[in-house]
Length: 293
Image 1: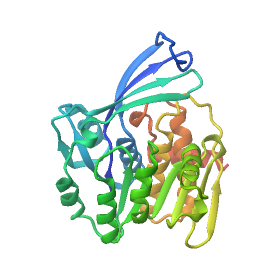
Image 2: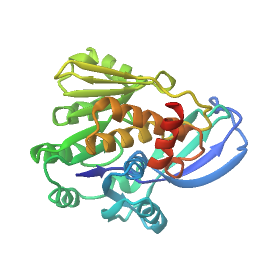
Image 3: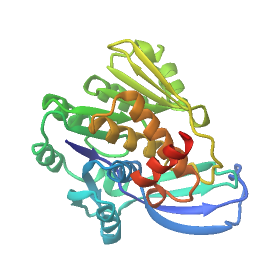
Image 4: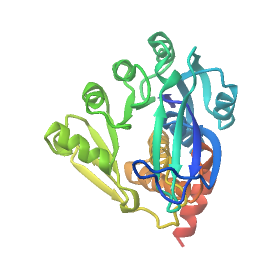
């Protein structure tokens, strides 16, 4: 099968800091680097490195290297549109403990047309997967098209915006959130997650692990995190989502897909960076084999 990702493509600017800035504080960065990022690009890279066939849908500005990097990870970029606005970018501050604070500029992620999305999804088949995040245009329309074709639709509710979740919720099969986003959604809707009209929910809880709920079938699975020394948590959730989607796409049952995704996310946080720090399937398999001894 194929994973289609209507996803953001960003240029990430990283600043390593002694601590995250407080209001009104000016800090000197200890180092600076630039790389490929965006929740969409990260998830595409993660799914491709996990072994899935991935086709990305989205938009970029004039920067050729962003697409070259994606293609280098095995992601098909034939449906990425060239836009007249700048490629999206992120300013990422990372402290010595690996925690981060991020500022986003959408740019081309909101600048491409619905026609290109529709043309891409015409090539999808029932059983394929569509990944979505709240960083691009046309996510609700894409979810509707995908469900009409019998595709699995996975939505990462980040950056969190309750109205975006409301709009896409009727058309998705799996809602993915982190613990903070889960609390925000419950508070905004005035109801527990178990009352949502969505078949499945995945909540990642950082060092506490992850929880998958099949609301339709009543099954609940918990996956503990793997203890590691964190260097940079940026992109860990995207790594988890991409690997989980790839695992399910390949036919793994939910429990095995959760374990695979947790291992990939654990390896990711031991490395600085975003897309370039996402581990390969061989590395993840070796990580799991070592812990099975």
